[in-house]
Length: 510
Image (cartoon, rainbow, N blue to C red; front, side, top):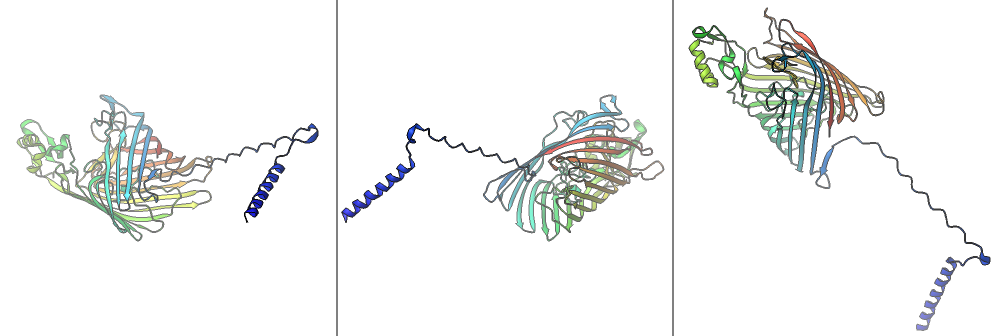
C-alpha cells in the first residue's frame, strides 16, 4: 500500500512538470526573435454624466436605516430689485420728499431646522428676517434699515396621537382663516401674497405666528386644523396708545374738546385668546400636511381640487370711541397723564375681531407630454374689526412719511369684504430652451372697507392688479419672478391715483 502511494505521488509530480514545460516554451531554433507581446487593452470609456435630478427633500440627513429618523435643513432668500412710483407725500430721508426710485430689498431670508427622532414626535425651528430696505426693516423701522432683527418665526413641538390627530404647541403657523393664510412663501404662484390674507400681522401676532396649541389631522379627504393662541400685546405708540388717539380735538387751551371718531384700532388692553381654524376637502390628490405651508402652484406634478373655509375670532380685540364720547379740557389733561390707563375711565366701545373666509384651489397638468399646467385660486373674506377700521401696509416699504399711507402702502385690512383671485399657466417645455420654464400669471384684489368713504359718504373700493411671470431654472428652488403692479394711492380717498410698481425677484431655496 505504501509503495502504491509513492507511485501515485510520483506520477502526479511528473504530470505537473509536463504541463509547466508545455506553457514555458524555449526561444525558437535558429535565433528567430520571439513574437511581440499582445497589444494592451483599450482604456474603459467613462460613462456619460447623468442629468441632475429634482431637488426633492434637499438637505435631509437620515439618522436610521429606514429614514424614519432624520434632520432636515431648509433655507431660502428672496431678493428684490424694484422701481416704485411712491404715494403722495413720501420721504426717503429726513426732510427729503421723493416721488419715485429704484431700490433693492431683502424680502425674506429664512432658515428652518426640522427633525423627527421618533415617528410620533416632530420638532422644528424657523428663524429669519423680512422686509429689509435702505429705510425700513432695521432696528429703527421707517427711518433706518440697518441691522434687521433676526427672530424666531416658529418653535414647535408636535405629537402624533393617531392617524387622525396630531397635537402641537409653541410659536406656530397653524393658522385658520384661509389656505393663503397658511401659504408657503417659497412656492407662490404670483410674486407674493396680497398681504390681506394676514389681516392681523404684527398687531396681535408675531409676524403671522402665535404662541399657543393646535390640533391638526385628516379624516378621509377632509383636512383640518384648529388652534388657540395668546393675543400678543399691541405695544401701540403715539396717539393710539391712549384714548385721545381715538378722537379728534377742536379748540385750544381751556376751550379744547376731544370727540370720539368711531374708528376702531387694536385694543392695547386686549388679553383674550385667539381661536382659529381651517377645513379643506380634497377632491383629487391629497396634499402633504406635515408642515402648515400650503403650496401655491405644483407646476403640473399634482391634480388638486380643494374647497375650504375658515375662521378667526378674538373677543374685544378692537377698541373705539363713539361720537358721544366727549372730553373737555380737564378730561383731555387727565387722559394725557393717564395714558393707556385712561381706557379704564374714558367711555369706549370694545369690538370683537371676527373673520371668516371661503376659498377654492385648483391645480392640474394640462398636457403631460409638453409639461403644461394650469393653476387657479380664489378666496372671499368677511372681516369684522370694529367700526370703520382700515389699516395700511406696504411690503418692503421703500419710504415713509407723516402717516402709514406713504411709500407703497395700500389699504391692507379693515371692516368689510375682500375678494381675491389669481391664475397662471405653465407654458410648454423647451419654449425657452432645455432648462428654463415660463409661467405667466395675473391676479386681482377687490376690497370694500367701511372706513374708506368719500366726502359724499360713498365707500371707495380698493382694486389692486398684478401681472407677471415666473422663470423657473430648477422649479421653485431657483427662479426669477418679474411682476408689474398697478397700486392705488389712497392719500386722498376722493381722488385715488394708480402708481406703477415693477419688481424683479431672485429666489433660491435649498
